[in-house]
Image: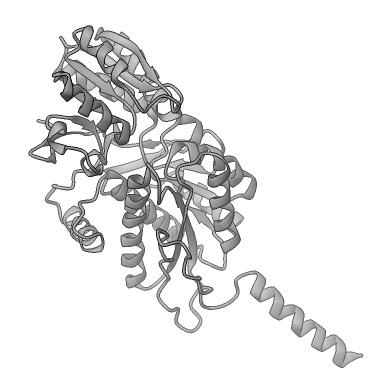
Length: 406
């Protein structure tokens, strides 16, 4: 009986270590079946006795109409993971899942796949709709969530574990109105937006409130469309044209914005077009004549043409990894997300052996007082609701590239 009990205890101990991640090396990650999926960015092999790698997951659109965002975020994150793992010390095991920017079943399925993989931190989701679909899941599961680019206020307000790396929608809208008041105070302004999308509607709400405070002349504020009728935006463009709008605000994603610019050109309408961070990616839309974007203004916290060492190194590495493609702000946001999480994990003393719920509690404590210098801002901090504070910036498309607004 004593021998049987001893053997039984030994088996239980082995199983317990396996279940709690007690191995000194991260579990191997299977290669994805889908051609568009990215392989996991494995941590460097752990030395004997070293702590296991912490598992960070990304959910985002790797295929579909919003893939420009998801692929950019993933590319930026992969660079950060590779740099961190090359340092030694705390290692990161990284895995992404495609949610197709579908803010329902596909987003939840992608999240559950990452959770089954053993994810301890969610570096996502990329889009607002998907983030809203899974934020409550992370609250229930006690998994820390830092989204690179979901900007709705409701995302961060879901729970104390949910944080944002990008500006909130109302703040973007208010910043856009302030810039217009500085640069185009006498302009006649038209607003085209997606009333079915939380991101677009949130930006418009913030913009219209601030525009009224500043006395801007908004002649058209009802040129709305929805996901069901966005294939033809000629009616919305003509509303602005007929009202004599010489500045048109486009607070929605680059795919529909390319339609607007293309149609406006066919009817000889040439106002100044002004977008927010969702506009970032328009120069890479397949089949779009990028010359039509000349003079386009967009709000973005990242300038790929900046000459500081960190930006130059990041841009060169991203181009090397992605066939010469220049990174946009979503790639930079992804990079900053990984470094913010890494620094918080190191400061908190957590690693791959720490239960996800304990990692969540530790990171919440760190983010209350942490300051981060990154590619998308210096001295970045977060408030008690997980919303970020950093200086906004605007770019103008000049000779086919982004240039800082003078």
